Amino acid sequence: MPKDNSNKSASRFSRKKIFKKPLMIFLFILLNVAVIAITASSEFGNSKNAAQLSEVVINWWLLIPATLCFIVAIVLEISKYVMMMRELTPDKKKFDTRKARKIARRTILIGRYYDNITPAAVGGQPFQIYYMRKNSGLSNGVSTAIPLFGMISGQIGFIIIAVFCFLLGSLTIENATLIATACFGLLFYAFWPVAVMIATFLPKATTEIINALVKLLAKMHLVKDKERAIKKTEQEVTEYARSIKLILKTKGLFIKTILISVVFHILISMIPFFVLTAFGGNVDFLPCFVTTVAITSAVYFVPTPGNAGAAEGTFYVVFSALSEGYVFWAMLVWRFFSYYIYIIMGAVTYFFMHLEKKRKQKATPADV
Image 1 (cartoon, helix red, strand yellow):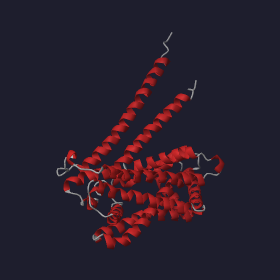
Image 2: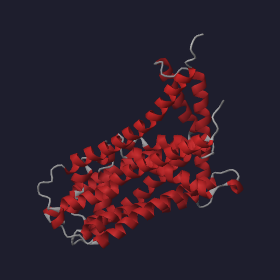
Image 3: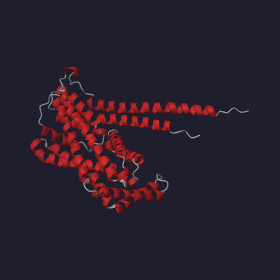
Image 4: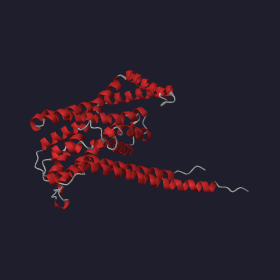
């Protein structure tokens, strides 16, 4: 009789599955370490003038308010997403606040993670939309609208702060070139809010444009079923427009999201001041804050992950208030709050998502 190799095949397949997952986790962690190491090396590789860390005098307690600013900012951002999810849930009685917080937290951290590892921060929203569609239980249109409106409200919030700061700029910043470049950067901040509003209130024109793109992709053999793709696009644009309009019409929701975004950016823009003072910098709060906002706007259009290569160069204007040996360490701490921490938190989020998926697979009986 021929030997039954099914058990051996199953055994080999099982071993492959067992070894494949740890290998993928290891490669994922290695990728994140490499991203941080390469970026840090490019930004801070030339540190010949940096003082020895053991010689640096740091007022560590001043890093506590910097840390609190970051934590409160992230909590507010999570609350903004939870609020939108609650308002866009058809049956409010079935809304699970605990589940919504978990989804909102992961959506934000995934978005920030991909924003900081992809050029021009283009990777965040697609992954946020994908995650929400798979896990939120909301319709595709709503799951698309929430991350996009989260981004839009954030950009509007920054524009509001920037306008006030630039009005004060002539009084606090002597560098006219910086203000001019920052104003140019605001045009990029305004692009997506304007584009999305056009798509919302002119859905037919937007659908026609998208349909033309689908037809072009079909001719290029990148889309197999043209009619199906067009129909799906039309449905999602209609649902997306309806969801955005619902956000705008829901009493107080639009104002609340904008206010949360304004506070978020105020808190984030305060961090350099506390980092500077922690390293002994003698600076006034308002000029430091206004300069931080101006530089953030000025480097927005730089198409590198996390604005690497431009951020550390332009932010030297802020940190030059320190002695030369301290600048390296102060900027390293600031970049941790503004860049590296998002990669770390995103990687940790993915790790816990993997563990959760593994637990669910173990709890689910295997098909016989």
